[in-house]
Amino acid sequence: MSEVRQNLKAIYSAAIAAVDPEAAVSEHLSCDKNSLQLKSRGRVIRSFELSSSARVVVVGAGKATAPMAHAVERILAGRISKGCICVKNGYTSDLSVIEQVEAAHPVPDASGMAGARKILGLLQGAGEGDLVISLISGGGSALLPLPPEGITLEDKRDTTSLLLKSGATIHEVNTVRKHLSLVKGGNLARAAGGAAVINLMISDVVGDDMDVIASGPFVPDRSTFADALRVLERYGLTGSVPAPVAARIRAGSRNEIPENPGVGSHSFRNVTNLIIASNIMALEAAKREGNRCGYASMILSSMIEGDARDAALWHSRIAREIRVSSNPVPAPACVISGGETTVKVTGGGTGGRNMEFAMHAALFIDGAKGITMASIGTDGTDGPTDAAGAMADGETAERARVGGVDIGEYIRNNDSYNFHKRMGTLIKTGPTNTNVMDIRILLVE
Image 1: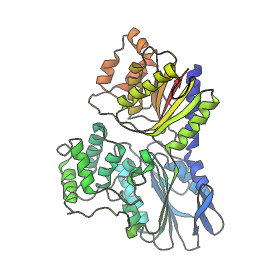
Image 2: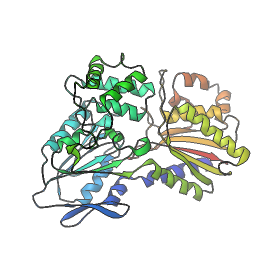
Image 3: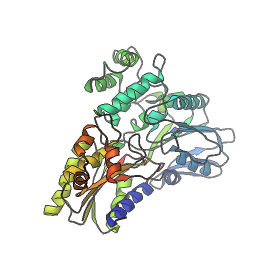
Image 4: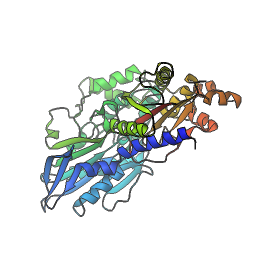
């Protein structure tokens, strides 16, 4: 492995370690004989009495939820009454009390729906004096599908697929999802009744908006049916989504269907929401490791959104600026960014937003020796593939030309996975069991 690749691996690994779900839960929860303490920045912000009659119920959904649950089982040893979490296939942990339901992601399946029903049933059985611990992380929206009457799982699956391929942001996708669900948009908080709720979240959304993380099952919904309709209209999907979906959202926008519980709703009187890990935490750790590797390191932003091609273009311009003027930092430089780009899928190939970013970057830094750009999903997966992302350097495009590989054809077909597979530039990490969006690492030697 080249020194540059070793440095990329070290920087990315430091970022992942900083948002370890089990460690994050352990940092924020502690238990003594009679109470459970919830902490933030080292201070106790709430204390929950654990009487002999109180039941402790653990629920949750997401790619990072299994290790979160493992920490809760250790902290509350012998005190958990029941629990159920929905996790992505293969993203499990060694749990003894809490049931794990494996389901599909990013397109929901019947297993996720069955898990959502179990979780809803557990919460409906909770009451005054009980404690609910919710463990929410990225991926929870797809893993917790429970559509209302008249909407089938197939309807929801088709709608999700159309939104993902349209280039809609996760905020927009989840605005629609929340209005096609019995559990999202604060509805699990409503189901929990009078029980106290601790909702711990690992954020995978730009800006860490709590009501967007996994579509906010325990958070007041700030969006409306009218917002959901505007998303469908913005991407020209009102005539493409299944008819029952369009009919429900239109009916809701006419106030014919009640909105989800919002800010000020009585449903949240006993709910405490807390984000325990996020993208900026990962970027800060990556910056420290970049400095340790000998680079002048800086964080560009944790809020990068928009088209993956556009993001690759201006990241490449920053790299070239460093070479020419030593701005915004001198070489050797490490520029780090986070967030979540989108791809409007028009071809039939296989790929993901991170691999798409790196494929375009190969063209934008063509001939610029000493520049390397990588984009990697912190969950260890990029799109429906076994890769976490990919990298490109100033020689990737030339190697492609020499090898008879037409980058333009792969771009037109959205076939970034197979492009990087041919070029040997895929980055594979396996499941990381965390999820705080993506990290991009730009190295200038």
